[in-house]
Amino acid sequence: MIVIDTKKLDDTERQVKCPTGGFESLRMLVKSDNMGFSMTRTTVHPTADFQRWHYQDHLEACYCISGRGLLKGADSIVHQIGPGTLYALDQHDEHWFRAIERVELICVFNPPLVGHELHGPDGSYTAP
Image (cartoon, rainbow, N blue to C red):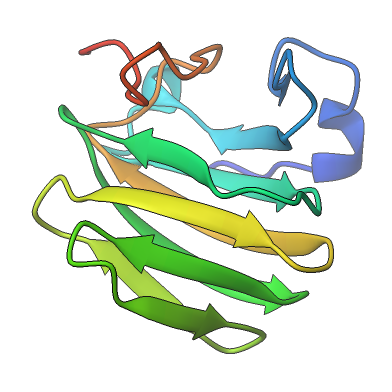
């Protein structure tokens, strides 16, 4: 059984901050936890522009627990994201996200994140 007090993860290697300040990600479960997936609590900070992400080697599902944002896919359709909204990137979808106000997401990745990944120039995480 794994029991994690997430407050104890702050300021550890499991708290990842975007170098440009766009997001913070608390890596609650990672590959070394041997669950077959990883789980994060990701905070996306308000920005004037959409941030581009494209997980070419991971599938991701996100559940919004607070805040408001906009999600845009490659088809240019914009979706309103708010508390209670789930979105799944089930086709390695290229997508853009813009937080209108601070957004908190619970995210699940498959395959699991190692824990310290940051987005590369192409918007993806390094392949596992």
